[in-house]
Length: 127
Ligand SMILES: [Cu+2]
Image (cartoon, rainbow, N blue to C red):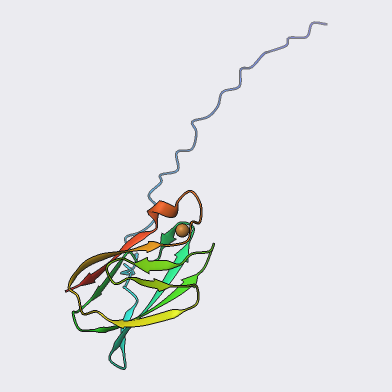
């Protein structure tokens, strides 16, 4: 009795190429709205900070506006310093001031929080 050991090479069937583009163009563009709202004449802004970015990179207000900025840390320990206005906002604190100088002012994380610390920069634009 002879056994024929047929060595059948495994043929990998064509890998399923799942065509990747599944998403139908129905995505709602959730325009990342800057968290600016008019409240009692003040621009109330909540800035959320995590490692290592702010949720808002640009805050736009008008010259003469009252601006109220609250900092929330969702991850890590950060504070915000607004250059030019010389304001520092600590975690869970709110700082209110009048934007009486036009221009662009960087706001930065003022607590060294790790590798990405230097990336934590945004802009306050007063126009
Ligand atoms: Cu930092």
